[in-house]
Image 1 (tube, rainbow, N blue to C red):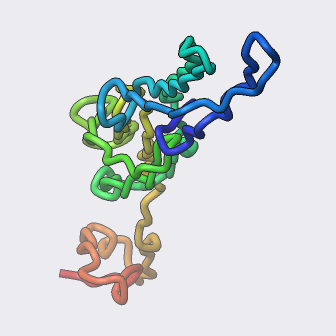
Image 2 (cartoon, rainbow, N blue to C red; image 1 turned 30 degrees about the horizontal axis):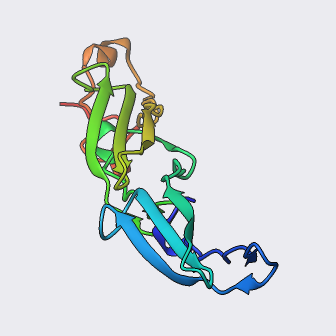
Length: 184
């Protein structure tokens, strides 16, 4: 059994005395260990059968609660152009196998290379733990891939005399003036 809420009281067996008369049990007496069972443990049901001569026998049933590992969604990833765009993601909502919402710890941030100044990867890892200690990690990895940058259009000029080519053109001050020749 994975969850305390799923424990179902069993039906005690039909028992007859030495003369074939059906006995009606009393009970059950229920014992939880630990008490109350909030995560894992055992619940024992005990019924007592008594015949007309006062002979007593008990029948018990033990249900063991053992939390099963839970799962997290598939890891996430994205490609961004700059390390500044590799921001902390919001971790997904994860529940235990019994439906409790688990709060993650973390994130543990891993940069490769470290420090991450240009290209590489940044991984955010969040760890979820249920009441029994089962853990699972969800991570999100950014790949930082610089995109080609742009340049203004190359400049050109037509001059009347070769001496006019000795003037070094000034660098454009804005994209609107790119490609124009401006003598000093």
